[in-house]
Structure formats: structure tokens, C-alpha cells
Image (cartoon, rainbow, N blue to C red):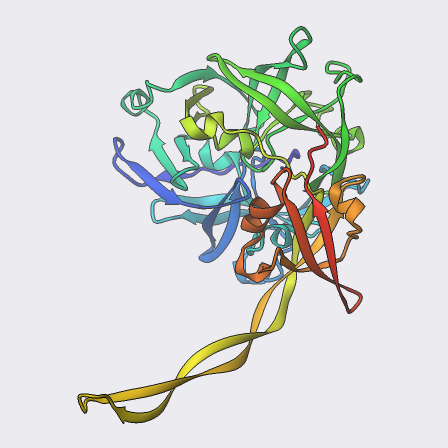
Length: 437
């Protein structure tokens, strides 16, 4: 999630027939949409993020290669535990190209240097920033999480009719960010109308903010949890299980593991534009989505199996991240020529023998970033910085981080055996995933 206030203006054009569309493939990692964007002819991976307005680059060390010009300094605040303003450098009149047909020749780009914001380490692929509302102001944008495709349409009545089978929902657009009115149910009788940001840059399901308007009942069971990184550092708080979220169009989602960040992480963000929380990728991925900012409309069509799927929760209490590459000695069996022989029919046969050889391979180093208090991982003895080598006998380098977490950490009742490295020592730790709710 990325929330902040900066001023800027990009105008993107769509070079296609008005009745056609431009299709952009994306990578989906941890419910985030990652697209390839060229900025001044330099290709970069950016997160498509409806929670931001501008194009933002983070910790981009090769900024000189982008030929940025007309630089100005801007100050803004961001979510996180570092109570300080963040300095952004603004560059105007940049050329941004997505695919072959989505182009802006006068785009604003903001550069931020914040070493605490380590998005690539959390996702395992190079991520250089975000691209947001400026991109979709003047298009119908279809998001298909199941096919990993974005489609951009010209806004006209014929294209809008293509989505007449979808639920059509009114939204509000504030600073190029989409907001929807919804109803939340803490239990059968305790309900509240809320205003929520639709944020494709937040991988979680739902965040709610305790405020004068919204008070999460004290009787609900809560556990401490870690929600990742904002522009201003780590975000922590509590998590509880919401009985139901009801969106317009009679769309109902039940038993949602909901984040309740501590107020220090978001109070500055909602001061000028009060809202009650965020709908993130874990909910959005359950639908086909079309955004029409010009007419302030959201079109939703539920994907049946995803829509009714239970919401996942990391029962283990471990948060893992990438921490660079390490060389590993890997055994490999190869067949080699031995000799020529003859079978009973005096036919030539070639005999081989197998040998065990070793080779070094650079693999991702995966370490523990956070251990939830009183979780199975906490009770098993994990600490921040532990290097994960194997889980249930499986080498972790056979999986990407998202696969690893889904296979092992989100499984209630699963017994897990970890081989870890701590301060040069190899250790085995055992835990049983048990739900705290």
C-alpha cells in the first residue's frame, strides 16, 4: 500500500482503434500487479497501484540513465513507523511507455530515496516503484487477476456496454484514487457504514482504521501482527476476524482476517481526506474488475471459485523475505560413457555409469523478518534473521517466496520441520500451525 499527497499531471494516450483494446500482461506476486514500464526508454518493473496518483521510483540507483530533467524537491508523509517527512525529487516532461500503444510524453516522475523501503526483498523480483491513477484517468481499465492481464479501452458507450453483465457500483475519485461505500458487520447486530480505498498496491484483504468515526469493538479477539512496509517504515498493529463485508450490488464476503494498524501509521494520511480503511488485492483478486474514473464507476464480476474461497491466514506467525543470493553446493547425478559391449544376439550396446558430481549454484537467501508474538513460530523458538534452509525436507530454493508461504505457512494443523541456520549453526525447529481465531 502506498498513500500520500503530491501534485502532478500525466496525460496518457491509447494508440488503438476506439472499439479495440490494448492488452498488457502482468506478473502477479502476493496479489500485487507488476507491469513492465519504459521510462525514457529504460525498462523497469513497477507495481500498478490504484492507491497512488503519480509514477514513483524508489531507491533507483541508476537514475542518471533515465535522463530526468527539470528536477524539483517535494515533501510528503507516508505510512510507517519513522516519524519524518520524506523528500521526493520531481521530474517533469518524461516519456512513459507501456507496451507499444500506451504512451505519455509529458509524465511527471517522483524519485524517493528511502533505504527502509525494501520492496524487492519482500517480493523476490526487482521492483523500482509504482504507477497509479494518472495512468487510468482517461481509459476503461479491466483487471483480470486470473489471466494476469490488464486491458485498456477507450471510454465510449460501446465499450462500456461490453461490461453490462457486471455489477455496476458508484465510486468516488479523490486525488485520482477510487473510494467505495461499504457496510461492515462485526457481528449480526453491530454494523457500520464505511468509506474504503480500492488499493491494488495493498496485497492484504482488508484494513480498517480506528478513528472517531469507526471504533472496532473491544470484545472481538485480536492478535498482534505485522503488515509489511510503508514509505515511512514498518507497519504493525492487530488483526481480527470480520464477520462480513457488504459492497453495493449485494456482494458479500465473509470471515475476513482484517488488519487494524496502530494509528501512528496512518493518522497523517487521513487527516485531509478521512476514510475508514482499504480493500486490497486478496479481495480484489476474487473478481474481474473494470475501473471507469471518468464516470466514477466500478464494474465487478465475481470469479466463482475465488469468490467463495476461504480467506487465508498465516497461522505459523512467520514473515519471510529475500536477503540476496548465496552459493550452494548441489549434488547432481550424471550418466557417462563406460564401454561398448555385446548382447546375446551379438548386437552392440553402449554401457554407461552414473556419477555424483557437485556444482555451485546461486540461490535466493530467505530469512525470517518477523515472528508474531505467541504464534507457533514464536513458541518453536524462531527469531528474526534465521536463515531458512529446508521445510519438511524440501529445499527452499525450489520455490519462490509466494509458493513457499502458500505451501507451508498458510496451513492450519500442518506439522512443519524447519532446517535453519543461525549464527553459523545448523538447527532443526518444529512447529504445528494452529489458528489463533
